[in-house]
Length: 99
Image (cartoon, rainbow, N blue to C red; front, side, top):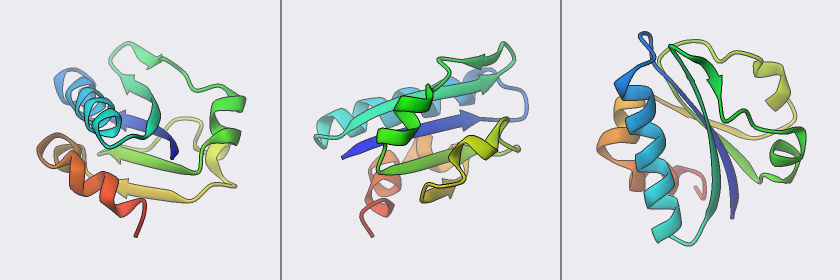
């Protein structure tokens, strides 16, 4: 499955990147393709392209704050979870996309 994700926490430092790493690792193990955009202290990094979003079957928001440029995802199915959930149990988060 093709997935795009956005991770973001209030301070935008460690947890944003930890969630991104956990989602990427777990998606790969489960046989999914994933691209993750981080929205942290450095602003938007690894910004998802229009093609990335268009080709994705689902969007994961692992966020504790509002997603910047959220309108880019308006036509997509979105699964939203807390950043901590993506860090602690990424397999369960990815399980929600097929539910």
